[in-house]
Image (tube, rainbow, N blue to C red; front, side, top):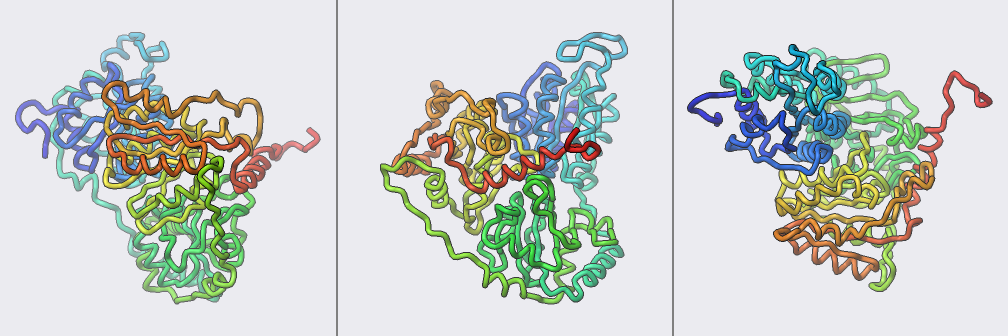
Amino acid sequence: MVAQQQGKFTVGDYLAERLAQVGVRHHFVVPGDYNLILLDKLQAHPELKEVGCANELNCSLAAEGYARANGISACVVTYSVGALSAFNGTGSAYAENLPLVLISGSPNTNDPSQYHILHHTLGHPDYTYQYEMAKKITCCAVAIPRAIDAPRLIDRALRAAILARKPCYIEIPTNLAGATCVRPGPISAITDPVTSDKNALEAAAKCAAEYLDGKLKPVILVGPKAGRAGSEKELIEFAEAMGCAVALQPAAKGMFPEDHKQFVGIFWGQVSSDAADAMVHWADAMICVGAVFNDYSTVGWTAVPNIPLMTVDMDHVTFPGAHFSRVRMCEFLSHLATQVTFNDSTMIEYKRLKPDPPHVHTAEREEPLSRKEISRQVQEMLTDKTSLFVDTGDSWFNGIQLKLPPGAKFEIEMQWGHIGWSIPAAFGYALRHPDRHTIVLVGDGSFQVTAQEVSQMVRFKVPITIMLINNRGYTIEVEIHDGSYNKIKNWDYAMLVEAFNSTDGHAKGLLANTAGELADAIKVAESHKEGPTLIECTIDQDDCSKELITWGHYVAAANARPPRNMSVQE
């Protein structure tokens, strides 16, 4: 439906219509005088709902979370003081392969040529700096100089974001948002997908057959790009055709069913789950589907597979000595499923190595709360309607150890690793999926970075359950490199959340010091539907997972490597 079918049609209307056409239903905003006319235009579109955020960092991270749920999102901020803050969440979207549309108002088009010094700027009349910066963290950045250029540039940016699964940037001067503009053409010009090149697809499949020929112990390693490419269905089809073991990188948890007979755990080097580490190192062929090998996923570069890899990326496939561009992951996996030979040797070996289910201790009601008891009770909360967000820190490791029931979703921001990401991201996600129960595992240090966005959960009555683990500090940093800077001021978190209620909110803040108090608080949270519930879980400062301790030691060692061109003595 085209906004304002009768009367003047503007640049702002054009952008609003295109956002609605690509599937955006909520756009996240912080108003500023350079974007106010644009906000009016977006607000007027009947298919768009404006969501105000507490600040631009939270706004961009809320949009990042919405993109996880919806496939694309929009964040609208003002020039410089707004956009530079929103660049953080935009960087997350780039690192995590999410199409976020960052939209910024900008100065009046007459000001640069008149050398005016404007507020919200660096104090000189060159106003291209924000656009130049945006180029580094988006797949496409456009600054609209004239209304006549708006359709072409807006369409270019949106198509680039959709195809690349990366953020784009659109800059609209304050005096152009209401300028007259033509109406948009067919949306297919933006949304039509690029399919695989047939010849490249066939050649890549032939190379895959050669790579697998003679291999006795193939293993599939799934990374986070598999989910971003929308390849979960094709991945299962391919895995079942192969018959081999399937291990997941930690950032890919939830992208392959954990109850599937071929699932062998999370491969995370020395902190792997089940027998994933043994299976990966036993393999003589490794099919990496959307894998990302960085210092965190390889535990400080100590867990990089040591055999030649077959790498399936979102839009290309690589083998030892060969590369094939314009081969889409979904199409390649589906095609390869019809070509491969069934080989379940790794599953036979896994049955010998598979660990017995761990004995889970249930704490008495009066026992002081512990990390393990929190995990045990959170495990019981998970259903097919759960979306679990785990923030940077020990929540990563605790979340990875949980068993996801069929249908449960898992969200982690492991490439960007911004502490506090989960609070605004979960808010954005939950607006798109009100049918799901969103649970957040977050530490006290992380929560302090983005706590303001809980007020928006209150405002929009979003029933998110926040499990805040209060151990009075940045535990993940302690395990990498300790110092007094890792100690933080303690807050009364339960009271803070209720302060956001003012006179019209319904958030609940609960404190749990014992196992019984946590069980009671969870019952309250599960029945509360009128807003968020935060459960402050107090544990000992030294109560963290052994996996975090091990991982922290190796990452610290990687960080401490001396420069290659300098001797240790120097």
